[in-house]
Image (cartoon, rainbow, N blue to C red; front, top):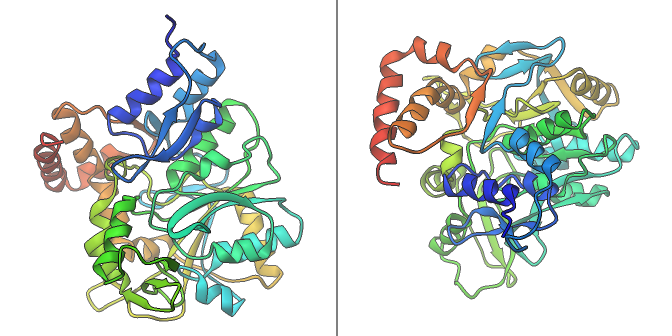
Length: 403
């Protein structure tokens, strides 16, 4: 009986705990589908028998694009590399001029505003987004949308499993994809392996993907009955940073702060691959967006509710052209900023990249293979803080022995 090597290697990535659930593998084989696993994370499932033949091209593309196997840092033309923020052609403080979009968005509403404008002006014909499922807003689903109403409905972060890469039109450079850094890295690598221009790739700063179980338990913990039918679930937005909010069909609602929802419930439930991620800032995108927090007296981000501000990073010439045209058309407000000022209010991203080499070493020493990362300057970053790196190695080793 023949073994389908693509299916075997997909299963190995999952078994090793290196799958991010990005969904790119589903683009390569019609027998691969994405579904929520028992642990509450999206994972690929193979529906065919072991006797199905291996597609050699799909196997090569999988090995080159799966972020559970390897990720290579992008080196765009005209970009300067920042140790913590990645390649930068230009970097901006920004927000949407449309007050409703700015209010609904997770920070300044910039990605929503850009997508709405790109569709309205015919620069793209569709954009892949993640939004609350119409069958139940406590779930999140990925889809390609073509209307302003669908774009605006997707405004705001969804701290839950999604697989946006699985529904991307990878062969259509006239489309766009908004995705987590791992999804965008996979699509960029896949397009490169086919020697073609990818869709316009948009990403955001990401701290990891929590299990769906974390959302469910948070909702119940706030007092929503398990049998209640929900009408809305928001993770952020409607202010900056905005509250976690759930409402049932009878109009009863519960909420808690972003600091509480992420810090105590969702953040601790992120998947293993996210804890070893080399890129939480969307390096492979054309444009990536994040929170441009205001800092308190100690330099830590201030989560007091206020008008949203984004940082927008143009990583490619294509991305910079989009940002500049949108600003000229009055879609977004932009002001050039210093990348070090952005890194200063993103301490999580800075620390996790600075200590990543230690965590990778600890995982490998405990017998857990990890993905290969190239071009992220991890050795140089680790040598800046050798004691912290050694502590990360030891801590990860102790935890990994219990996996």
